[in-house]
Image (cartoon, helix red, strand yellow):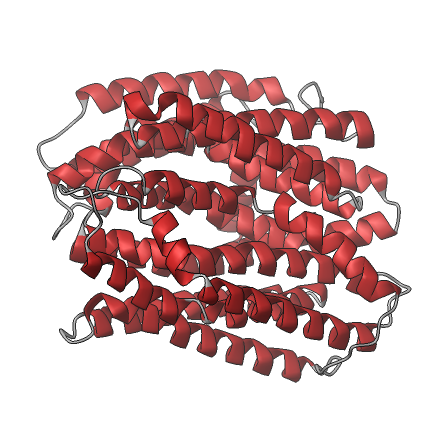
Length: 513
């Protein structure tokens, strides 16, 4: 377990730096274009390529790791088979998406101007960005496939570092090109393609240096290639919950006024920042370990990972959720409010952000729990739950509230459906696989964390009401100090086991020095 935590720590650090670069890209778009149609166009154009990367690429990554780790797999042949399947699949998808550019752009750009029509220049910008960004899908999904092979061979740092390179290069090139008048916002499209080329080149070099099985083409069909499709098809839906939310958010936001797409994007990105850093690091490391434990029939270790992981996520994300909810406006001001992102943009984004924050733990936990279903070879149940919640519960909530609450209804849809999805996954996992949260476990001491959580909520509520300064940065610094003090102090005061163990380790290290 200690080695597991060390690996997660290293991957987390790389992911933090990577996410910072990716998040800075959003901040700079806000600075340059605020909540305008240009910002809407950039986010809209990147929606489909990013969706394919995360959903298709993520599904192939997980499936490749699962089959690659099996004792019966001919790995040399499987590497070639899976490469051929991945390349052909994503290439066909990309060609189809490019062929249907006009209807796709019409679907995502339903916002109306004063005359009741979207301006032609805004539509042309979205299309130009889309033409540049869409081909990067092929490279991004192939990058995910290479990352899966690296992770299966416990080269977690290489795959994480590749994403860091992608986000850093994307940011650098986009900033340079978008400030050239003749290129302007199209620079973000060019940057998306160039950064994807650089990322896959890095992964190919890293994989070749590892000296593993050669990559090539093979159209031979056997049990492994058939199982790949059996696992992938439902996994594309089951593992796509957050991405499906994002896709539907773009569609519904496109039906609202100018800036709604940008506001939903800014709010969701800020909400996902801490959640994504943690859950990406955990799932990157945990799934290969889970697959091996399942192959070894080590059910005790799997149950321990399941309950402890959910408990750790709660201890970490509950305080962050409460802080983000009460200080939503200040966070938006500090992170985004500059340049063309003015007070009006902040007013539009803040309530959306506050509601999104409440779904933080549930979205992270759903992704975590789903990995255990996959390790059990069950990709059907998560698919059914995702379809019900994303396409039924989520849409029903949005349609019910959109007339009254506008863009906030999109956030409410995400919150309610993520909670119901969490309940379904938890209940079915306990019934089918005897995987339990461990609420009543003596080892986890779940209820010991309840009083600190209550204290954290009360303190942050009153501090957000009465400790607000004219300078937003002073408010931000003061809030962080209060947040850190109350979280660490209350957890230690009530003897939360995990925090106490971490504190004791730090003390021992300092005493040795």
